[in-house]
Length: 276
Image (cartoon, rainbow, N blue to C red; front, side):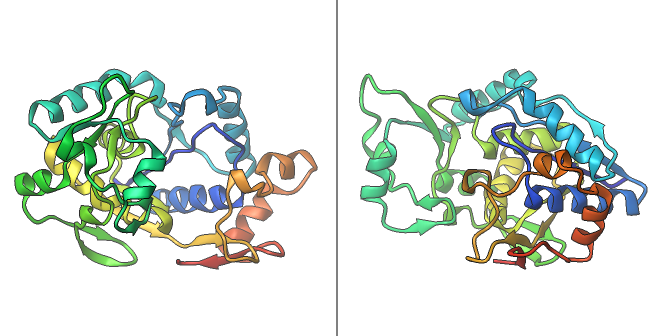
């Protein structure tokens, strides 16, 4: 059975880009008589707002979608901790005290998530008395796993290249897990067989594939869909004030009609499709 999911974070209202992603996951599951799951990813510290979870449900219902809801991330902290402890015990994580400014100053390259970490704490150890994150030693991880591949429905077979992102953080200084660790564990726990998300997260999958191998998790397939972008070619984002689904719903816009337009790639003025 095909199982897909939509996993929004309650740190801002949903916009058209989220609607496109949710519809993609929903329709893939429904076309195969599968399951479409809703998972609330609510471990983003003070930015998470509990009341938005209900707003998300109202938005999806307004679009005409139906789903099965699975436990939200805040109920899964013990599982994240166990996975991190296992990786530490295997010598695959190391503590890091570096700040964003230090990382940006010392980075030798820019990756899909910004400056690629230069490895200061891997070589010299963290600074005493500072808050610590825990990073994956990618070179050691690949020595353990060997070559890995993963399959994207649109881009085809891919060789895992976690080096593109460098030694990513798996346990953040202020939170129990990073997106990489939490999403990988959650998708396995929820039985997701097709991970649907935008092409902006394509390279993150290289890390997720390595984590699946290290933690003995099942390997799904992926479907990275094109993004909706504005007139400036920038993806729609909460932080950039993209119009929310809730606002559209509250002024009486027809959600089912909007969903049909998104399925046919008929976007509102100023919105277009990009695979970049």
